[in-house]
Length: 113
Length: 120
Image (cartoon, rainbow over all chains, first blue to last red; front, side, top):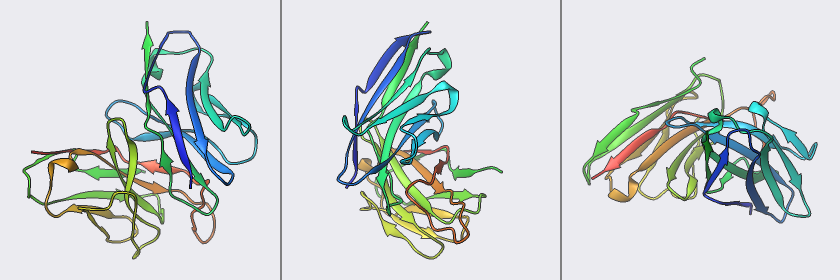
């Protein structure tokens, strides 16, 4: 079964600084991994997904994530934070043949002006 | 396209009352899902419907029932609400781009705006 763990329920970065949100997975089979973003009072929106093609995945709004099998990680990064990035971010995963996602507990990102 | 819509946006119930949360999608998706979101717990799957006429339990189905009324609509019912069901509820549908619309693990889920439910 697939499970995902997000390290850090709250992350604060200064505007213009690097954003790094951590996600680790545990799976006995190759995973498919997703990052979703939730802006205040809205539903979740897909940022990017890893589907076993390229290990470096680029998403919307300048975000990217790198799948590292050796570290069982799929961390989300953005080189320069913007105020509009303030939101909650969820890592999610599943496996081949399973259309149900398992979500992490979420990381709330705060941007300091 | 309106995408995935949910009604109501907010609801307050007393313990023991019943209500139905409505969800509709206009993207011709086959599969639909109901999640609940609680602080520090992420999203947990309540029920899902792989196709019209079928429903299956997810991780936390107790206290809920669902109906897949047609391809567009998937409702969630609380027969006797309890304070433990205070949560934000999200409906989602899954995009498939293959001829027979069988979802795959790599397909993207599209979420509605949520219903914030408080049970007193």
